[in-house]
Image (cartoon, rainbow, N blue to C red; front, side, top):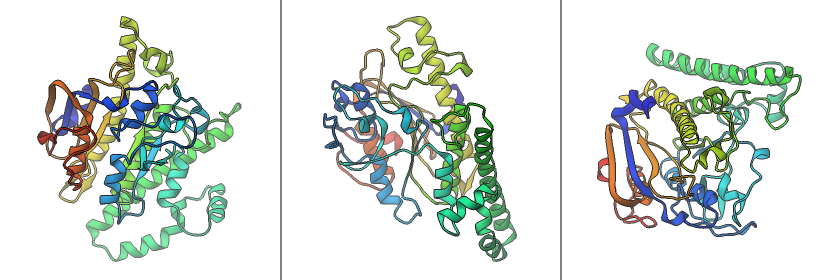
Length: 364
């Protein structure tokens, strides 16, 4: 967690949380599906899947009603990479974090261009926009006149803020266009990767985080989920000295070398999350920063991946003004307590949630 030190005063580490509901034959599918639901998924490989509404979607219905996009569901793995199912559980459980109802999973989007156009696409039909993009025009050129009109009505301070925001949007679009150009010039293009996905995974992750910051900053959405790495991922990390696939590495059987490599992967993931948090902290919002007015959770539905258990789960909550804490339960406590508390922070008052035993007062 060393990379979180710049935001440690807004960080709470929770130790010994568990997801009893995830205990089943399909431990990878249930680890993912219960992470935001604390619910055991119906075991099926068909389309008759059933789970429950995830807490992010409950929060989106509460605070996202007046935004352009109630919630964003993002990932880095693409459709061609997500074909596996888990011991009788449909792939949908393993590949989606967000559920708007017990029978409606919300698919993640991994293509930055698709997300960018969803956030900022305006003016003309989709065909018109694609035609202009092929001419290397910025999608923002479609709304330049509206922005100029808006800026004339603002004071100098607000005009500066709008200009800085537009510059940030243009920079993100420039990176997407660069990725598209590089893909077009590749001798052997990656057919599984859309043109706007950067070749380097770290660049892809950072671009997805930057898109979230832009969306939050403009109040286009107030709720985001991001699946940085899906269950049973075979991604390799040669850039940090781990050329072996993630999933086999996580099956460490207490082998010191594998444990060291798994720790490297985990620290790497957290460092990328820290990149996002630092951006939020540096982004003004009202009387503070975006991080001051946000709450984010990072973690996993698996504790010891070698044992496929769902106890002593990694869980870190960041944001607001309460932090610098380590909440360590003497006995395993339901992850549903974290869920219940996050719902309360969003203004959703519930006496209980799944197998919860109460709110976590230090988080409120």
